[in-house]
Image: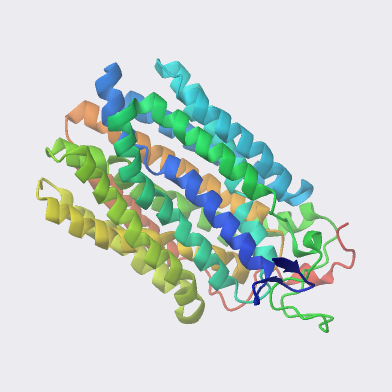
Length: 432
């Protein structure tokens, strides 16, 4: 029996604040969506063999999807701030589901570009961009722990789904695989969003770590004249744009590896199942660093740890040049996975440190913009370079350069000891 109370929910005698239910729901949604995006590399060779399409043509669908997600991300964040995140997520989920099923009917590149590229791209943005701002609203303290739990889902999806999708492809073919995934996604998302709430107030409780006796708190929501005014203040900071560029460079670096590690392994005569295990091992290792990164960043310094993560995302790539040894691939997957998982974990903490408790739809959207463009460029250019040169050497070199540039860009960020927009508390009128 579940009993709802003012501050938490009680299940069989154990009391849980509803903020953790929000984290759980967000994590499952992120796991499902990332399993579609991050395992695209598993599809490249089967599609190429079935339809005789080039890798550049196939990965252009992935690039279009990420570009569309990137360009629509700032709008998705702003719409979530203005109309409520749950409403935007419902629209995004229907688009995402329709895109999955439509992709299963693709028999030419144009249909693939429309279904996977445009429809899934927009759905992905509307469904996932609002998640981080919602989590930040539910946690007035211990945000790093909540973000840590949620960030693990970015790795769980690809880790679990890579071998599953590979097995489904071998048994049912790629079209039936997308229909199966679409059905599972539809049932899961519709059920989960029933229990999703934008804010603690919409659930009728207080945020995590705020007591009924507290009139104020150090993390109290600032009173803004209007959302556009705070968004303008945030956009005028250097960090707003620099974090976008860091996201871009980091995503160029790891998207090349995520999308092409399976084709690279297949190119070295490793089987599809074993190649998918490399991607699973990489994503599985990233779960650990994704969980630990926000906690470590909050205590020992965000910029330093993120720089180390970018370094671990670049140096191990040298191991892939010319190797066909499966154990080297596995060793690479572990080291790269640590850096890949740690690369993104500091951004929510940076947002809180730089912008306080301001509405986070705008900053989250612009960072998704940078990340989406980076994923698009890295995901497409690897296939294009392979078609042109017949190997992946230049693609791997580009991955190394992008991650290294991101590391140096992190060092340009300001100190995180104080917020960059102290004017926020001077505005007296609350948002209604």
